[in-house]
Image (cartoon, rainbow, N blue to C red; front, top):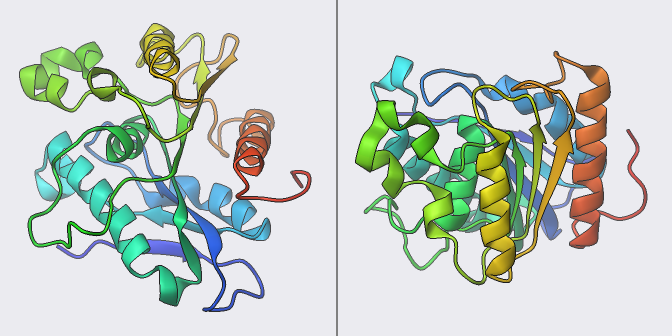
Amino acid sequence: VELRLHIFNPSGLDQSDKRPAIVFFFGGGWVSGSPGQFFPHCQYLASRGMVAISAEYRVKNRHGTTPLECVADGKSAVRWVRTHAGELGVDPDRIAAGGGSAGGHVAASAGIVQGLDEEHEDASVSSVPNALVLFNPVVDLSVVADRFGERGLAISPVRHVREDLPPTIIFHGTADQLVPIESVERFCEKMTEAGNRCELVKFEGRPHAFFNYGTSKEDYADTVRRADRFLTSLGYLEGDATI
């Protein structure tokens, strides 16, 4: 299966640079979706100096896959970027992962769930992102347990929280009917209790997918501005947001 990474480079990028990077994973219930969802985010973050990437991964409609393969592909994407950091002009120690809904699950699982690495890959190169930027993510698959049962619980990030996990920011609508905000509140509490940085930004009355560029320009800009501030606090970006 050929899977592409759509790479948005900052202007003036040199191969010898060590730029921070971010890899986004689209939403679509592990069934469908398009990397184009995060092209606006990528364009903005590239304008701020990052190498911004929107990744393809296998989904049920196109490849007959389950969330397990989605997570494996997410890990492969992060590992590929880290492996090729030298030619991409990327700092291998500043690679964030981001995503929305099921894509937020893929990003979070790359950071938190152990195992599911592809056997043919170089295990000496970590597939764990250095930070997580999540938009109404599925962090607890028991909320969709009727679809995945025990297998789903095995890849629920909330079940795998421990010390030394990537710093995380989550944007979530309080009126999300698909992914209840209580599930991310529990996740963030567990992260904080384990000594990890986890910021939950609640958007009052917003439904699922409120953050998309095509849904609300205001909420899109607000979430991106806050993501910018978070990445700046980690030393990935400098100066003020330009959105």
